[in-house]
Image 1: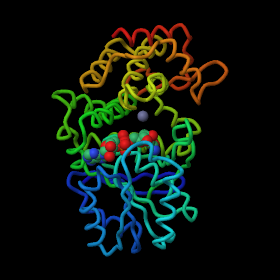
Image 2 (image 1 turned 60 degrees about the vertical axis):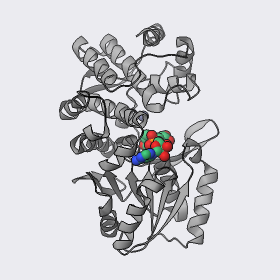
Image 3 (image 1 turned 120 degrees about the horizontal axis):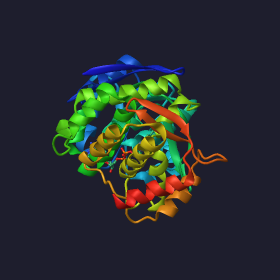
Image 4 (image 1 turned 60 degrees about the horizontal axis):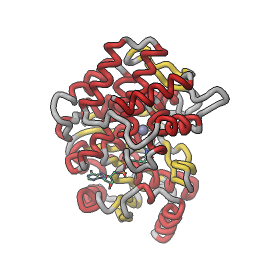
Length: 361
Ligand SMILES: NC(=O)c1ccc[n+]([C@@H]2O[C@H](COP(=O)([O-])OP(=O)(O)OC[C@H]3O[C@@H](n4cnc5c(N)ncnc54)[C@H](O)[C@@H]3O)[C@@H](O)[C@H]2O)c1
Ligand SMILES: [Zn+2]
């Protein structure tokens, strides 16, 4: 098991990554939170697979454990569901010293974290991420939120957990498409971090992507990269924007295709292709590095061509990005792998040209 420590202004806490480590949860919760009640929140897909092991581990460590099982899906990240959870916690008499355990993907993590942050102004929060995306991205960094009307993550806050435990064995049951979506974020971290993280991501593409190929070093390296960014900028006042690499075009593609044609990770892969091409045109990224990036994403089995959306519509949506200012959206581009540049303005003609190119790749 690899242990990392995240040190932010608001809290210092451990992230443990390993294979077959779910059984360690109880002991780790005892150590970081102490005795008390633990309520495990998970969805109906994850419950039959991992809930029993988690409950047993908590009980063996002497914690009083109970659970809440929700339907699966993004629609669960709602204020209505949060209110329902507040009711459960109230009825079970949870106090500040007690702990909510999020067992599942980013949906369960974001919702549970939001409830933990707000119930009695903040109770204990532990993350047990079970998707690759949640392990390397959603469970790291303390952003918690629910969706509101058309706004994704519109109501939320920053709330760091007391502990994150990522068990790579849980990825064995993940549908392949979900695994690929997580791989897109791992590729993003690799390109931003360069060096060892990028080398490990590139090793993934030697064979068709499988959970068995996802190593502890790869996941730990990816987490370490994101945690390092968050440590320096917990509340996204500057540097954290680097994590938007590939997301400016990616988010617009998700919206232009009504969140149906592409999953988040797939749209991000397309956004990364666009960002790589723009990096060569505007930030001096060598052609060989650009090509390496495209091959990496294609090799992970992520979609490489934009379909079911007009380039003009995607560009209109880029202009409506939350981060857009008077003179357009500031892009994150790469000078070299490991050397991102923030706040690059992209001329509208070039933006359109690159999105057109995505349709023809
Ligand atoms: N807080 C952040 O910083 C942050 C960052 C990125 C994404 N997010 C959020 O994360 C969410 C997406 O997370 P996600 O991709 O994990 O989606 P998800 O939570 O919906 O999980 C994807 C699917 O996999 C199932 N599943 C989860 N673990 C499984 C396992 N081990 N075996 C089999 N099935 C399993 C789930 O039931 C679900 O059907 C979005 O809501 C997004 O906004 C948050
Ligand atoms: Zn993302």
